[in-house]
Image (tube, rainbow, N blue to C red; front, side):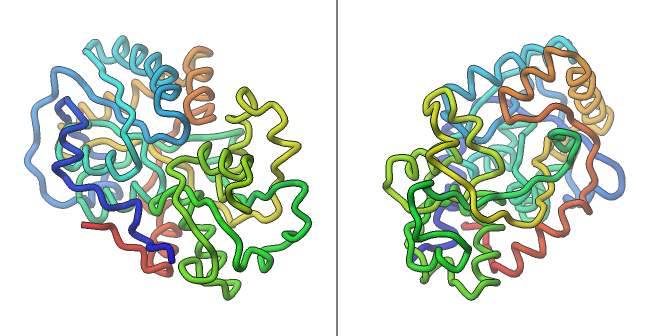
Length: 308
């Protein structure tokens, strides 16, 4: 049986041993300033920007560092880039005021904003002109036993993380709607990353993987035939794109400054290339908290709870 909180349980003590850095503050207007009353913090000497491990952590760190360098130039301050050990660690790092800006997935953002009262929404990613995306169920091309969602029952599934919208929440809700209990009717496991879920499927360790569309693009270098060997067969409904969120105790004018810095970076060819390398996005635009109401509904439907 797969427990829904399996990937959400990282203690604050563990999270604080991973990060070094201070924080800063910002509001995104009335709609996004729902994190509760907080005391305004000082602007940090070093801005710490956190990323979640949607791919190999070392590889992502190397790809994200140039974004930190550009941000440092825009803000005229030191910027440190960190890749957290898992999805929950980034939320805890921001709540502990040791990570100032985070690239949060939709579910992570809702937990950090609604539960932790720790962040405001700055920006949403844009991919190919869209601020939303889909998750896909992927199987091996040579597996003729799986052709539709109902065929997943009893199969081995590599999910990504219990707080991953594309890697678990939306696919699990879709299974539930089809009468398949994602905890009891499948042999689920948390892979810890979209690339790891696909790698497990490629090796034959599982029968199905649930990842964002199209996570296979990030695997081509290591597995050149990945799109031939692994094929999607079901897609979820649209999911709002991931966010750039900021600690809500940082000064409002500084939050706006950070927001504009990212916008400026994404107007450049270099910025667009870095965005593609990191999370396959080609732009960053101001977002609204209400964009994530559908995510809140799915979390409620799944009774997904953040582990304490």
